[in-house]
Length: 336
View 1 (cartoon, rainbow, N blue to C red):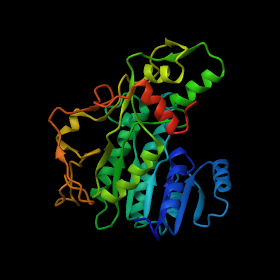
View 2 (tube, one colour):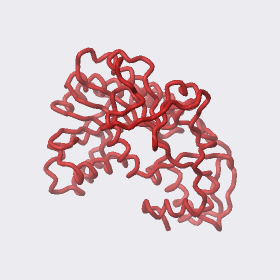
View 3 (cartoon, one colour):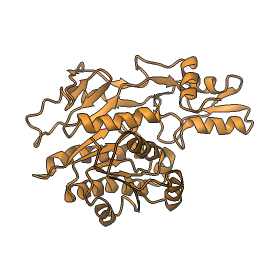
View 4 (tube, rainbow, N blue to C red):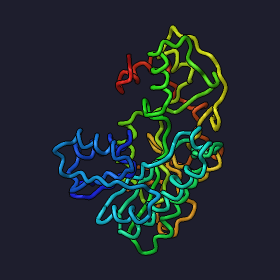
């Protein structure tokens, strides 16, 4: 699908962007990959990792800058929108900055994609966008709504938009795993647990990249794709990482949830379950009025979920035990 195509990745120097671009370059033959980000140091470091890769184009730019975004998308076929301000406490303290990046930035991506005739856009979302209680989640919910709605406002333009929503990425920057390891390495005598009932969804970076690539292939336009992935208890994660260190409950941080949700009960009437993912289908379908969203473009078929269904990390049927957590950490290079 990506052979001889131009692909742009916003936030291209982040954890996801690096792995996605590496995968595309290794597994496909794109004509060009545009790395769009605002950090010149990370772009410089990325150039060192791909010193002889002539297909990479490095654009310094911010998704807040509509003109620069439009310039970067010239002759682009596919866009992955991964740029975001995503630290929950930072968003609570800097709400306007989070809104400008996550909401205004999404609008700029949409307008630029339509103006430049991009074929498909997949935007990355988060479990925090479902039933949000923090500002980060609220901005990503608005972003999701913008991308879904954009399919109805493109008019006769060819651009189609979809969203991928998944949980915590194992070992991603700013997440709990590197935080715990920093404490362990510094000789801490306890690991802080915000609440011992807390659960989270988990996905590996490679799984996230593969799911996004698959979304381009299976999307009609307007779907929110959600992978079926395991949960774990935060106490089991801490025990697996440091079995001999005390766990101490310190209280929930600003904007933090006990359990995360990816498919809210309120969306059950438009949620379709497939073998290894869910699809939250659009409520308004001007440009896709004749589409059967229970079948993907790949021919995968699903079925409607029960009326009160909710995909919640606390009642997920698949939970990782401590042994499985250790295996997951080892598999992803974060084991000790």
